[in-house]
Length: 244
Image (cartoon, rainbow, N blue to C red; front, side, top):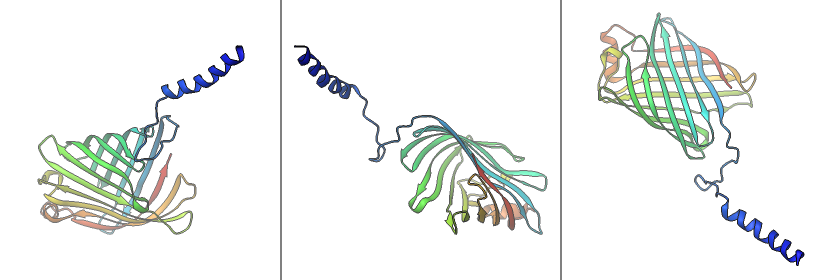
């Protein structure tokens, strides 16, 4: 009688557990990693001096996130210091949700904080890896003044060796309305691009040299010219890339 009762318990217990267990949430047909801990990660993509006979500049571009596989909080920052003035400075605070193993849907706010007039934007976009590990981001913005904007950015790592890496990078900004006080024009307004060659002394620390170009386009180019500022500059640059 006891043997029969124990046998029944061994059969019934696993069945009951299987009925109450929560099935894993699959993303795009792939089983998620069972590690659900939260982590903090930051990367400084650009921390560089840019040199040209017409004027030098210092630029930074970095981002950090805290969270897990699905939900994260992001902080993004970039800006340019030139002739004692800070320009192109914007900070973004975003929440992201993974919609596939390689893509995150992001939404939040962006604040243009530099020596120019302050602007505040709502943001909604997508960031991740496309085919062949191409990193890209596309974000739409709407301002508190009824303006709309879009930012497109991307980069790719060509591994010349395991530690020597060539990286083309580009960022484009488009606006629906001009904003002369921030040297913004309607349409394709400005571009910041570079070709960087870095050497990873350690995986988390890599100095690099680069050729970079930043400038205004179309209507914004005329606005900058009328205000007596450079419309675009090609510079030799060097800096460091680091992450933690």
